[in-house]
Figure 1 (cartoon, rainbow, N blue to C red):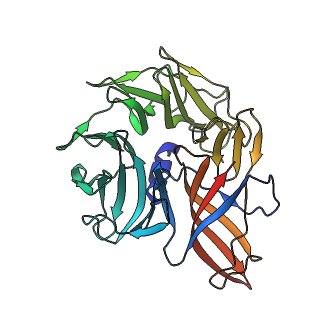
Figure 2 (figure 1 turned 90 degrees about the vertical axis):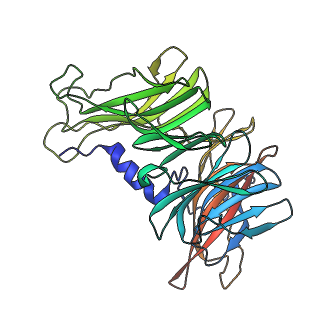
Length: 376
């Protein structure tokens, strides 16, 4: 039976909630004098940090399982979760709200329900639960009263209540620049006996114009004959750069291991130019555009925990500094840095990452939650 790779990714996302930049950095050699993550804060017994969001140089938030950290320009202070959340939460994430503040999303472990709360700079305001216990798999917050969340269907918060919006596609991600200009991407099922080839699914995109979601045609993807077993194509990410510059990313895959021809899997990269969707060249190399990038001003972009793309197009590696000797850990111990989220600090040349560092010394592994920074 065909298992669509997009659905597998959606299920896996429950455990990581948009860990945009999960990567292991075990490098010790200095790749460049300024291209290394440096430790800003090391914590014990926190279970890892999963989200980070900066609204200003003196207003930075980091999220862990059951707690928050806030930086006010002088130091990091531990903050409690909103009262409606309690302490037993996981899969915590932070999203910027275009109108100001930030949106906190987390799963309540005890009841296996998902909650959201908006921080306006002074206080937390909790939102009601999503309809029928649905999860917030993907979020776009345009304003405190204009929030979209995905879980198979699209749900909209208007400041008073959640409403369900039916989409003409099976959706996996959304993004937008205005309340009347959003894109959702995913896939559509294809009739095997139809005229769209042997693929069981094809990429799909829908646009919100402020009134309704409308299907917008996207290019089909086909493997050359003879087709491999149970092929399918889908979109898993969308990035709206401007009204006439939208990028969508996904995969064209099949069920490997079956008898027959087995070509390479294919990256899907599409661009909306304001009129139609067109195919872009396949992504190649460690610094290829795959939709997950944190801009470093005009200098370039951080693509992952270990890769940096300069404005001149050079692909550089990012190393990690040695963890300071603290709490019984020796800086000479074997270390691996895992980053779960990365964010740029507005108005500065500094980028923050949050995650954990795995340390192995004398055969006894240990873990520390960390906040690291990259400064060009």
